Amino acid sequence: MSKTIAISPGCLSGTVIAPPSKSAAHRALICAALAKGTSVISNIALSDDISATLAAVRMLGAEATVSDGNVTICSAGKRSPFCGENIFCNESGSTLRFLIPILLSFGGRFTVSGRGRLMQRPLDDYFQIFDQKGIQYELRGDKLQLEGTLLHGRFSLAGNVSSQYITGLLFALPLLSGDSEIVVTTPVESVGYIDMTLEMMRRFGVRVQAQKNYRHFYVPGNQTYQPQNVTVEGDYSQAAFYLVANELGSKVCVTGLSESSSQGDKEIVNMIERLKKDEPVHIVDVSQVPDLVPVLSVLAAKAKGITRIVGASRLRLKESDRLRAVCTELKKLGVLIKEENDALEICGASRFFSAVVDSHNDHRMAMALAIAATAAEGDVVICGADSVKKSYGNFWEKFAELGGAIHECQQPMETCFK
Image 1 (spheres, rainbow, N blue to C red):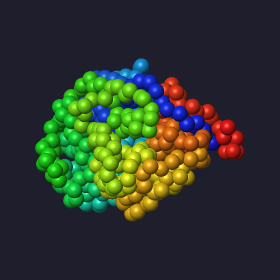
Image 2 (cartoon, one colour):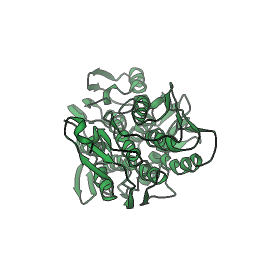
Image 3 (cartoon, rainbow, N blue to C red):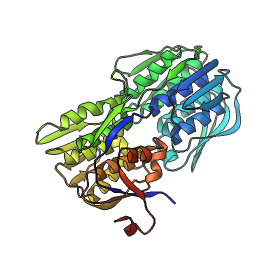
């Protein structure tokens, strides 16, 4: 049974260290596993997603030892072809899409699997590549069976579905015996994540030539990842919840964030400043930062005027249909909000009423609703609160340490209200 909690209104106060960047941790662990030698990745939080990548790293043949927030990776840098192994990705889209090309670079026959909505999320760009390259594949329910070897050459894919496809190929292509190129057929969304990939690859000694707009990449083959020690930086996408809480009356000091970070979600700082302006209509394009939408919508509900959040079509393909989930749950809190095909329209100066809301098994929804609850006019009950384990396992503990008034509920829901 999923966890249900009730939150009483009240401001948060105190200091919190931004949790380690999940995106940076995925990339560092994978690069370390592809390097011959020993690497130490420091400041790791073992969320469900990172645990999935850590398990996959071990399937690549690397030894991984976890101690006090550090992961030591010892790897030979190569492994023999796969012979029927199953790589379980849990609900991590990054793990799944990053690993598929890497696994195929070693060749053989294997299965990648997941749970929840993971295997329903788009893989069509990879399937088109498989058809072109003669790689055999079959998707059955929560399992994708693959057989073949990725060979160097030319790869075409869209840039407006997920940057994770591009990252997966970028990781794998340097390992191949010849040079490759990636041609991106549509403008790239979530550019910041590709910045993070290329930056991490450079740290591990791998070079890629990229056009400024990321529509074309040239990847020399026969490269070798070099072991490195990496400290994972703080995560702006998680810090965003506390930064928005401050705009609702809380006083939380967030430390551990780098102003020079290439994380796209650093844009939350600018978005907050924009929504402070006294304008009748705010237009916010989230095509580069879709993960910010749940908490940004909470902020928009309290801002002056109308906020239109646009460029959000990819949110329908996340852990939940996030556009619909945000609209459904904020309406329960009393927010005037309208869902469109790729946008949300939110009337500001809303009051948050007492309500029972649902996370839709989506970690970012659960945390955004928690922030809204701090400024509500009565208790807010969040069903599916344990979904935060996907990215920020101790979120509720930190929330309580900052003064958040929470208690776990039992059924029926009515018992949660004081």
